[in-house]
Amino acid sequence: MSIRIIEGGVTAARGFQAASCDAGIKYRSRPDMAMIFSDSPCVFAGTFTSNVVKAAPVLWDRDLLRSGAPVRAVVINAGIANAATGETGLRLCRESAECAARDLGIDPSAVLLGSTGVIGPNLPMDRLSAGIHRLSSSLSSSLEAGTAASRAIMTTDTVNKEFAVAFDLPAAGGSGTVTVHLGGMSKGSGMIHPNMSTMLAYLTTDCAISREMLQRLTSAAVQDTFNMITVDGDTSTNDTLLVLAGGEAGNEPITVEGEASALFGEALEAVCRHLAIRMAGDGEGASHLIETRVLGADTKEHARLLAKSVVGSSLVKAMVFGRDANCGRILCALGYAGVDFDPAAIEVFMEDSRNQVCFYREGHVLDFDEEKALAILSGPEVRFVCDMKMGSGEATAWGCDLTYDYVKINGDYRT
Picture 1 (spheres, one colour):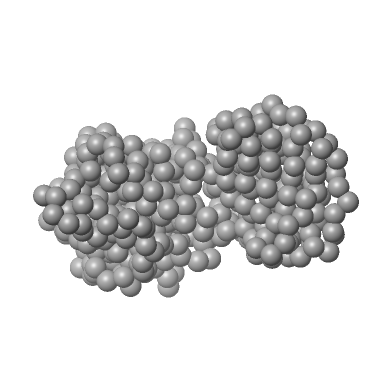
Picture 2 (tube, one colour):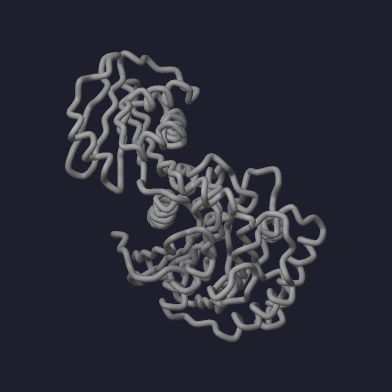
């Protein structure tokens, strides 16, 4: 049973609606609030920032996850992070959930929250509540509504990020199969160096699955997707990944490990990977997506460390921006990753879809074709392959180059 790419994002799954609006939270004349709503109660899974300084909506969502209660809605705002706001921030979370609950006819404990933007300011509750009223009255299950929601949660993103897949699972009762849908949206462009998931990401599915299994598969999916991207080395206060499952597909509920759970996990990882790569390529001021694939490491975890060290290196980022094929930058990043290896044994390549250049082998930087290397570095995507010659551990990480525009964007982000 294969996984098929389909149109849409958070409204691709049966039973989910979305809405967006211009609430004037921080931005003017652009959508800055979004809502996801499920026609039926959902089990949900989540992962959150490892930053000790956690935003109020992260604390709110984490408490709801621990409670195990079903949820129906997610309310998200862009522009103000509601982080470092103390008791006031938590009170605003409660008031936001109560406002949405009244409009939607549900319990406040069924409302998840997300915020992204400037750290420090308090959310303007009058504009927030007005936005919630507008969102609640304009919900739609159309694919267009899902796409509009993905645009409304953007901050410094230059493009919206959404993706959806479909696959077949055994029908409830054991007669034939049914089609299950899984879609999502995310935002992220700066302050991205996750150690759990990402900036903000919301996935929806009509699959029937237990809460425990959904959490297990979600935690596994982030390890080789959202946890393998970096833009600037900063882990946000607001990082949140939520996966909502409404169960309307009619499949045999997934409660134990087996073929069905494996296929759902594969689909979940595919959606997470697509959204993660899109965020890495849309890093603030970025002009190149950088991919580093590590082969032949002694363990999977060491492969992850090595790959992330390369894409996270400021000097590697600057090298790609300057289109300067300086192999020393790659070697240096591998060397300080915290993994022991034999420098005389490894090979390092640079490639794109058309060309490949080997510029390090058997302990020496090679004489390589500078024109071919320049051609690779001039494209929108640059891939490094590092063969450690130690074992079977493999991992891939994604990042972006470091440009002048990154400093410009973040030099006046607040003002």
